[in-house]
Length: 259
Image (tube, rainbow, N blue to C red; front, side):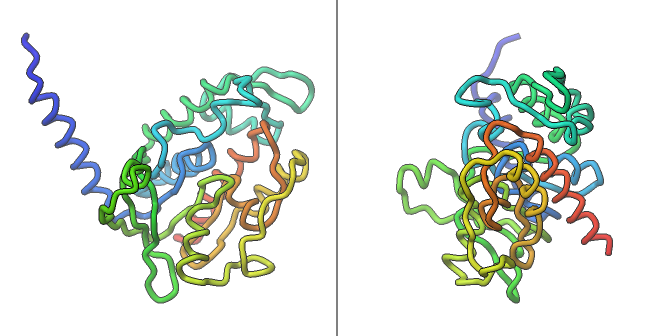
């Protein structure tokens, strides 16, 4: 059977456009398709929520792909083992309480399972602004990442959601937009972004879960963005906290929606 180039192009444009139009109003928008963002998307979609994840890069997975210093192995603690099992990720017991996984398997497994549950991931899209109504975040403003890279003046589009999650990692990009453009006071001790501390895995892994919470009306933080906003240390190439943070923010949102 001959292959028609125009049919190929039409299929891509039509199907992508359908997905994008269907995603203009959703339950949850997640900024960042790192491990925390995708795990959150998985658990939310699993419970029937309409979830979209915007990732500014071409690839998903955040820093997990590179493990530690590009040795693509990641360490997970005992508390996160049940999540690894749920995603079908092989975990090798290194010594009591420490498991080692192949980072490529971990990222690809989390991504695949999140998508299969119904979370829609749009890569190469950046969030450049937020929607706010009555002092509550009600959506985001998006553009193709290439527009920003090329410094083009191209107007963005808007997507509405009941809840937004900033899972953009160290840069906490959505929260920074809220601070810069709205001059808003956050739900932190200082009202500002408190900033992450130097690496301390033990404390960082604990506080990343503790700091996974509402940062501003309508806006949760998860993953490394949580420690960046609420002031916890970075934890390096141990990734259990990322999964636990994604799971926790999903639970918080589900409980909030059901209350």
